[in-house]
Length: 282
Length: 310
Image 1 (cartoon, rainbow over the protein chains, first blue to last red):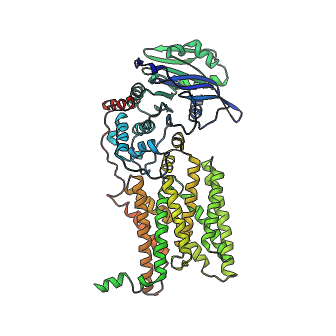
Image 2 (image 1 turned 30 degrees about the vertical axis):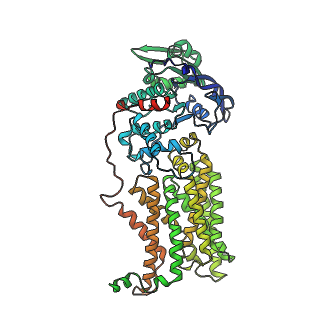
Image 3 (image 1 turned 90 degrees about the horizontal axis):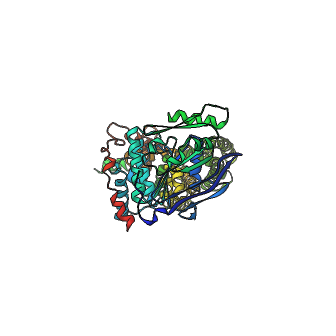
């Protein structure tokens, strides 16, 4: 666990999700989601495919309007123009032909929204170099991004998202398609960023286990509904049984947490989804 | 020595008004075509570029029919078609591909009719060749300032939207999260693309404009990994191919056995293609070698702390 910093701004609420519901073409994707994230905290948004993780991210990014509810970023309603939120989308694989070096991608995080050609400046270059250092991407700063491995591109995109000094960093399934070693490296990197830069980090994942050593809080999403709290508060059989509306056992084996479907399998949609996540966790 | 110079630059080359106009207009069109081409290739919209040029041919041939400057026909129809493509295909990329193909087919059908009327009724036998394969040597003096003005417009759009377009071609959501008006920037780009292919339809022809749009860009992308350099290089290649094409076309009037000029568009396209093939020779093309990545754990995040703490 990352030690919580003693400073007073530790309890500053960076993200407030206040009763968000989303209905898309008659189907309820998110149902009254509520949670909040403080500065310096690393939060895992855990749920199987189709649980609504990406939709929730799109709402936070103001790319999707919520049917009801509101999103507060640093106490203010989120607008698309706000640069308080950094974002790393789900499994981007950049085209090998894209004529950009890793440092060009990071620089676009600084001023990609501006009109005109970028001017070369020492200050701009220093900011980019610092960020490349911070994510351990300095070694391939001048390589074509499209030729980097998935894990390397991930680092470059994290630097891109961080270089404008956001208060909140969103990462959609950053651990998908990574080998075990890169997975651990990315997790450690993100934990360090959260504590050292004092920003709130929200990571979506279908498996909570890689995040367990670093996660301050967990938001567990199933069927468009969510429970949130510390891992110990949420990862309990009765809590998740309530959430899934289906018997669920939470098992702890060594340092791992397994969520398995209970004995009475029904044909309900949540049971199917549970079976889905169960396979992945095991 | 002067014999060789005369052999390369046939007599009268620099005194010909037609050549001067071709060098000026062809050069300007090549510059913008090269720049916009880089964006077109990295956005994966080569097909849209080709379709806009072909649909523009409908406008060009229609304008011929009613005695209007074909440039207005090209630009008018291409911009309208770009608007339709954007409206139809904004949500579904595959839908856009199909819509583009269908509009393209309908446009070419109309062009066939207009070109038939051009040649039978108004007795402008050169219309088909001019519209489809270009007319760099027969551009009227009054067209020159219009072409240059539109070239400046395209240049301005590309320079203004440069960073937004690069970012949204990496990933639209990445750009949107940064506050880029992705849709608006895309519309600006499509307008620039429509004008660009219309301009090159005037010089090397509607059918061949794709060659000048895509060829130099694809070549440049193999040679450099910087976006600005790719655009500059692509423009330089396009201009070189165009000017060299003009030179060869002029010289070809003196070539046996016919002693009649070859089409300039042919030379331009062949030169562009040759340039592209050249980058596929062994030893050229993008270098894949790179340094080994630094271990993540060794990164001095402390640097950042000093900044944020300040």
